[in-house]
Image (cartoon, rainbow, N blue to C red; front, side):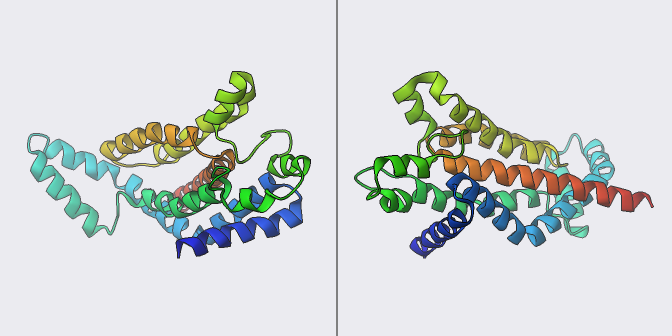
Length: 237
C-alpha cells in the first residue's frame, strides 16, 4: 500500500510537470489539489475551533472555580467539551493527515545514488544538464531533491540561504496555524515543541518536501482566517 501511495504521488507530479514544465510548480499544484480534497475536513475542524473560542469564557469560569483542584477541573472541562460536542485537539487532525503525503513525497524526491527515490531513479538516465533543469524550481531553489544540510555542507551558507529560509518557514508553518486558533495552553505548548523538533526534520528533508508543506500551510491559514471571519460575522448578525 505504501508503495502505491508513492507511485500515485510520483505519477501526479509527472502529469503536473507535463502541464507546467517545472517540478516546483508541479509540487505547488499537487499541494493545492490535496488541500482541495481536504476542504470538507478543514472546514469542519475550523468550525470546531471557532466553537472552542466561543466557549472560552465558560472554560475560564471552570478554571477559576476549580483552580485548587486540578483533577476536578480536568473532569469538568472534559465533561463540558463532551456536552458541547467539541474536540479541543481537532485542529491537529489536518496536520496529522498530511504526514503520509509528506513521508511519501520525502521518499519520492529523496534517496541516494545507491538507493534513489522514484524521481532520482527516473532522471538518472538523462543528460546531466537536463537533470539539473528538472531538479530546479525556477530561480528560487537550484535542486528540489537537495536537503538544506547537504547544500550547507557542500557549498556554504550563501548557497544554502534559500534552503535555510525554507526550513524556517517550515517550522513557522507548523507553529503558526495552531497559535492563531483558540485552544488549551498545554496543546499549544505541545505544538511549539513539535515545531522546534520538526526544524531538524526540515534540515534533512529534500527541499521539494518543504515546499509542499509550506505551501499547504499558507493555503490552510488563508482558508482558516476567511472561515473564522465568516463565522464571526454570522454570529454578530
